[in-house]
Length: 370
Ligand SMILES: [Zn+2]
Image (cartoon, rainbow, N blue to C red; front, top):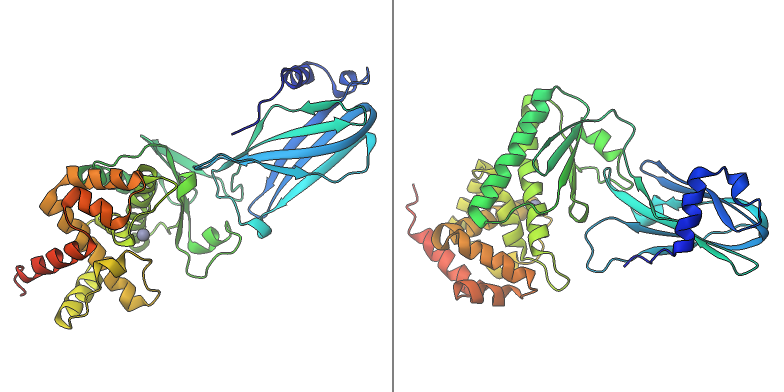
């Protein structure tokens, strides 16, 4: 919860709008005469304050809150270092290398608390700094709750990506009843090098990042045919993760990985041949992964992870095809209430993860193998 700002502080800040700084504290009252925040993207966020009083200013604190989905809204309080004096200008630098970065399109609310030697205290009205990657000239298009920012490629390129996002949303609503609650922003970088430049500690292989709590997805997509096809799949996949995250957000439990990834995979469209081949091979060699193992994070080994994604897709498809959309929606709602994996399945379908494993494998036997 954000602290209440006292009326006195509000009044002082209103005065500041109309009067020049010198006038404000000519009578000796403690006042904040200047306050700013500037982002040096993506590394540093610099907060600066100037204040004056008839006696020494002895304490300055910066409070800030990052705007994102939280179970409990908390703000950070920073003691800012400075030499006590009647006029003070000082700054505090948030070094993102120590904390991890903020995505483009996010925002931070901040306010100051200043105290002088006479015991007088002033709070400023919260101000907002929008975190933008101003290394590029972003253009934007919006449709419904989705906004897409891009800077390279023509309008048709952006419209094609937007269409992929809208298709994924319709497909998800049709399959599960889940809909986008809060707005989403896509930042389309022109390639993965530019994307990595927006991150503090990027992985070599990073092609896209979903900041689910912020409702922000950043992807590197080159405006050429091959990359656009890949990009459309990534958009559908990550957008689905984000919607499912919004729909099931709770402090107690998460989703089994096969359900989360399976829903994201089905939103992409048909399963690609690499996945179907992996699945066919595992069936023939009797090496399918159990549903229970697929509830945990997937293997880092490429072959095994390919199979895990393929099975997740088929498991979700099996549940939707055989039991329908309402049940899938109820399953997601059950998870929102903080249910365990087996309990949620039991409640909605009448079987647990082992039961699903048996039923799904049996369903494979009835499909003719060409
Ligand atoms: Zn995924």
